[in-house]
Structures are given as structure tokens and as C-alpha cells.
Amino acid sequence: MSLGAQSAVHDVGEAKMSKSATIHLDPGGNDVGGDGSRARPARSLVRAVALARMHAPGRRRIVVGEGVYPDTEVKFEVADSGLEVVGAAGARPVFLGGIRIEGWRAEGAGTPFWVAEVPGVRDGGLDFRALVVNGRFAPRARHPAQGAIRHDSDFPVRWMSTTKGGWERPPTTEELTTLRLRPGSLPETLSEHNAELTIYHSWDESLVGIRVWDRARGVITFSTPAGHPPGAFGGWKEQARTFVVWNTREGMTQPGQWYLDRDRGCVVYWPLDGERPGEAVAYAPTRTAVIRLAGTAEAPVRDVRLKGLEFGVTTTPLLAGGFGALR
Picture (tube, rainbow, N blue to C red):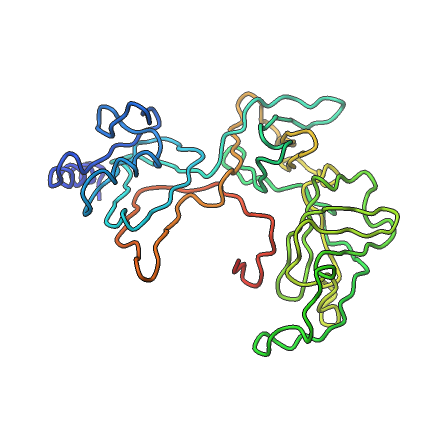
């Protein structure tokens, strides 16, 4: 369909609806004074949905203008059944579950890194595990750069298969939250506040944080439990006795990588050739979802239609996702 034909379809569609049933959304709009009209559009999707709810149930439309809509998270409820959220003719609106990171500067001290302070990181109010720089998902700092690290944890309990109830006996909290290191397997300079670990199992893996690293005993206690004890399935696969470390300065080994320095409250990024601090467009996630549906089996959300929209940049909570990332 040509762009002109698309415009005609939009015009005809809006003509068939009452004026009050169409809400306009634009990055230059106003959530306080805007009423959702074409002349006074809303600025956020949250506000546009609220305006649409003021009209009678049925076919209502939000027309989204060109641009980027950051830090978006919207919950569609039963009252939103029948709602359409569509891009305006010729527009490519983008909804992001994150914020733009600005204020980049050279870190100095003989490093090639850039840093940007992010409010809320140091006090734990904001945490994230992804960074998009100039349209590219930047790889997070990883230690080691290749392969994995062996550990000395063991869980010699029989797996009775998923159909027979899992482990022969349930693992204890201590077994799910403890990792025994081999001597010298981690750099002494590593910050446990920043570090996160992927613990490998047989068919899945667990992402965990560090609550305590007892360097004298060589024992790490996780801040969140693993899905299986470290060392489980060790009799089946060697990978089940290994782990890797994310988000530490020691894992910064090549341009394009980044880590979140929670100790200093900033993002640290190693720029690619040609990237400049004042021109970088970087987004970090603040939300785990952009769109949520809040219906139930008894009261479902029906006929919500999204068209001509793009979504991106969300984070994941620090928990073990389980087989197939079911959680």
C-alpha cells in the first residue's frame, strides 16, 4: 500500500469515529494541559490511555506521532478493551522502557572509558542489565572474556526427572545460595557490589548477585537464590561446575563493552572507534515491560490492537529464570 493510500485509510477511519474517540499523542505534547486533540496532544502513552478511558467503551483510538517515547510502561485493563494504538500515517513511533543516558565524559586516568552519572544507581533505586548505544545493544563486561571458571561446589543428589518431581531431596537455602571458589579463580580487586554471576546447570542457568564474598574462606553467598545448587548435574556435564562473572571492571577487555558501576553511581562505557561523547545516543532500561495486559480468565482484556509501533529497551530482574526462562 502506498503512503498516500495509508493516509487515506487513516483519514477515512477517523472520519467514521466521533472526534472525542480519537486521542493524539506526540513527543512535543503536554500531559498537563493537553486534552488529546490534534492541536493539544498528550505527551505520554500513560496519559493518552487515561484520556481514552474517559470516553464510552467501544472502539477508541490513540494516534501516535513520530518520535521516541522513553520510560514507558502501560497496563491495559478490561476497561481498555477495543482500544487501538496506531502509528500516524508515515510515522515510526518508538516506545522505550528506558531513559536516555547523557552527560558522557572521558574517565581519564589513562583509560579509554567514558562515564556518565545516573541518578538512583548508587542508592539502589535504579538497576539495569542492558545498554543500547547508537542503536546497538552493547555487550556487558564479562570475566573471563572467553570460556568459564570452574568452581568446587558439589550437589551429589539424584535428579529424578521433571516428571517425577525433580530432586530426590529438596536443596537447602544454603545450597542454593553458596558457591565455593577454587583458590585464585577471581581477581581480588573485583567489586562484589557490581558483580553478577551466571551459574551454569545442565539445561538452564541462573543469574545471581553477590551478597558476601568471604575471601579468606573462598566462599560466595548469593543475594538471590539460584534455580539449582551450584555443582548440581556435575556428573552429567562439565559445564555444571562452571560460572562466569558479569558487570565488573575486570571484564572490560574490548571496545563496545560497558558495566554499571554501582559503587560510583555511573555507567562506564568503552567507545567504538569514531564515537564521540557529545554525539552518543544511549538508553538504559528502567522498566521490565513496556506493555502489560491485566485481564483474568473471568474478565479478559479483549481486542486491543497495536499497529505501526516499535518497542525496545527493557531490563530483567535479578532472579533465576528457570528452564525456558519461565519465570
